[in-house]
Figure 1 (cartoon, rainbow, N blue to C red):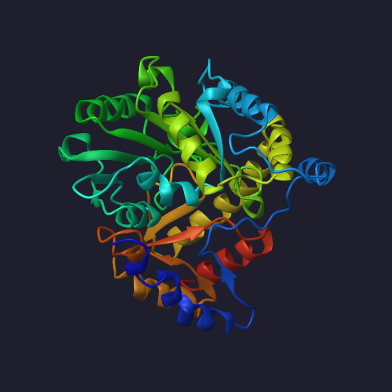
Figure 2: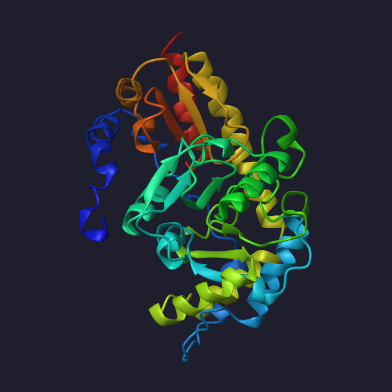
Length: 370
């Protein structure tokens, strides 16, 4: 396909529902896009400000301090010890990496890129830009023989599903049989809510229980947008097999894909501070605790959603009909149609609205059936 044949941006279809929601007497509650609304932590802003004398070109591979901070963070927060600077690479947000990784890895015509059935659409777009075939399949035994890249999204967007270490290990084993790279998109990993994930850390695809201590063919992708409210900074990174990271760094040098130096400095501070991460998680926990029972009282079933930033909900009818009902309540969601053809009766509701707006949504949902 290349970049010339891309479809229209799907969110334009939501505009009429947003207009209806804005007409509500108490205004719109926008739960459609997972864009943070809470402040960037003050210590991170100060680190950015202190680094604004950035007269030289930044390092594509990241400063030594940043690469060391990423490696230390993986050991402390993700259960992945032993990473070195050669294992990690900063990126300009994670979306550009998701979109470009097939191309940067040399995946192309005749190759398959596997992604989840309920999927962030950029996985498919990245495959098509590279000229590869996107394949929606969750189970490793369903991955075709010509698979060259497998995307695992845990916790998932939109559905909040989590892959445990055993399932991740089966995925890595199958990918190695196929000669494919496994890329774990893990940017919601700090946001576990239910079942074992209420107390147990969400595992990384780089976890030794998954890889057997061998990182060959495995990458993890992470973003600070959600855990640290740095979406506007475009602060992300990848880690894993140095035989993949090195060539990716080389290509990114040629393309000029480098993270601004002040952002790199801010990331070092963000990665080293856990207090703000826990504070943000408690904000999302409180919003989720208010919104989820209100949706259920209004006739929605919440599927999966044991972790992550969203509630994956259905009332058993087409998502556009649910979008219409919610819009009449002044609530804007995202239709399941945007996340592949397999969940046409689901809507995605984000926790990224202020406490007051989430409370308003909950009150409207409750009142709609009282």
